[in-house]
Amino acid sequence: MKYRAFFLIISFLYIITTANAQENAEGKRTFSLDATKGSTVIFTFGQSNAANHGQERYTPANRVYNYHKGIVYEGADPLVGPTGGGGSVWTRLADMMIDSGMADSVTIAAIAVGATDIASWSEGGFLYGMLTETLDRMLADGIVPDYILWHQGESDNIAGTSEEDYVKRFESIRKAFRDRGIEAPIYIAVASYHPDCIADNNGNDTNVRNAQKHLAQKYKDIHQGPDTDKLDKCMYRHDGVHFSSKGLEAHAKAWLRALK
Image (cartoon, rainbow, N blue to C red; front, top):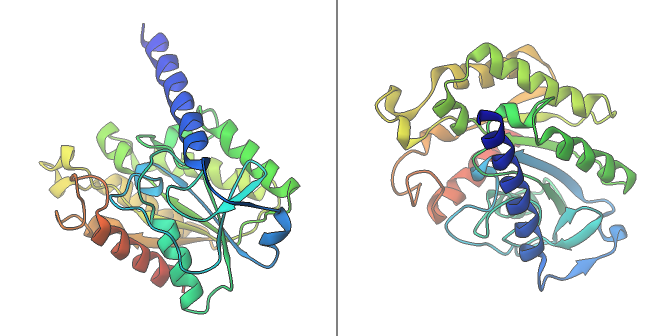
């Protein structure tokens, strides 16, 4: 029964991911792959706060693209690739990167899936194949990441994942990039806050947070991203979990500071 439930969850998430991608692509302008030449590529993944589950959609003022499965779309919310139909931190970050002079244009490749734990993304997990297939397709299309951005941890707070297991699982994710010759720096957000765990450490998880920090200390190619557990007030989280418009703006600014 346990395994049947597991496979039902896997099937459901795959269906949702595919349906979201199709729906989010509807009506969007597309471009040739050549349009992304010279663009700064950010590869983003994780769970819902790295996907399209924010309160308010955003359309960048600058030249921002959204790559997914060989197609280049206009880079506007909701992004094609992640789950959800709302707003994203990445479109806002892309605009800020361009405005600050960090990039002339930005291409976002995003595959985050809501409610997923790190085991789902690591080797042996049900999303590991999607991760590696996406990377292989990107390389074949000449879309090479300049920054790899990971925002995840809330589900592992709920699951009670140990620091050791979190580190070990992310190491297999890191290996997927490095085995393919992708040498872009990896930025790991410090993220664990979930209101369902508010009775313990104000909703944060010490094991998850320590693991995320430890990875940035252990590897020279891994850097610490923003600490979004600090954005735990209701003005930042419209439903207690996902970021409000104000929260998305603060989240993007925190990423910009980390990347600089």
